[in-house]
Image 1 (cartoon, rainbow, N blue to C red):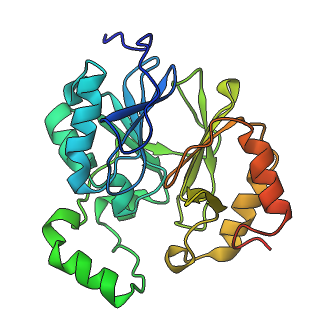
Image 2 (cartoon, one colour; image 1 turned 90 degrees about the horizontal axis):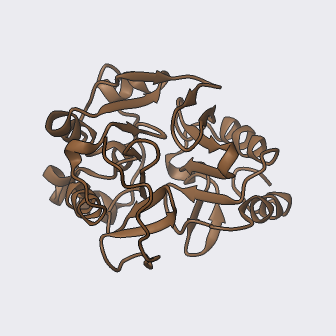
Image 3 (cartoon, one colour; image 1 turned 90 degrees about the vertical axis):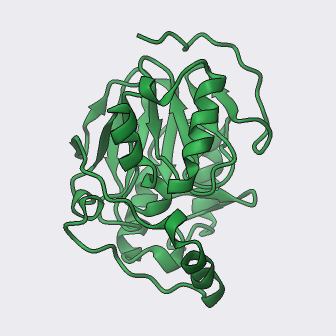
Length: 253
């Protein structure tokens, strides 16, 4: 088994170099165009979310910096099925044999059995995606593990699956309680240094999203690792609860 959990890499700001160390067991592949891509190195090499299809080179570069390769990857855990979070999964399955996990309610979308939900894009964004369609086209994949509420993954001392629907039917957060770390996918973002709920234009069920946000307030966590924007590496739970109480996180307020 690849032993890289004890590597002492310097903390790198996002956008410089291929990888950023967040904790001893978690790194971030930087320069990704889609979601944040987190690399877990303890006890086995795994990803949380996997970016757009064009984000395979940043993943490769980050793994090389850690002394690894995509063939060393064992799991990718998707917080939901949207293409900016799972775009490289099908390719990684073919090239490395890694296994993919996603919530059971999102699995039919990931497999292509149910059509991708349609959203309204700004004309400029629609033109951008159409012009670069081969780079962003949705790549269906077949999950190896269907996640359910309360399941515990053998990573980081035990990661508990929290079903937090609203942004998608099967959106999940991942809570490493012993480490005080919460992966939030798109339920909580930290873009431009401002905590935000899921993007309204791409959230078909705001009521359930609000319930999901309120659920997080009861958790005790120090680090918040969002699907988009900067990770919060300290006092994250208190920061989140303050924003929630102020009604600053759509759709709560």
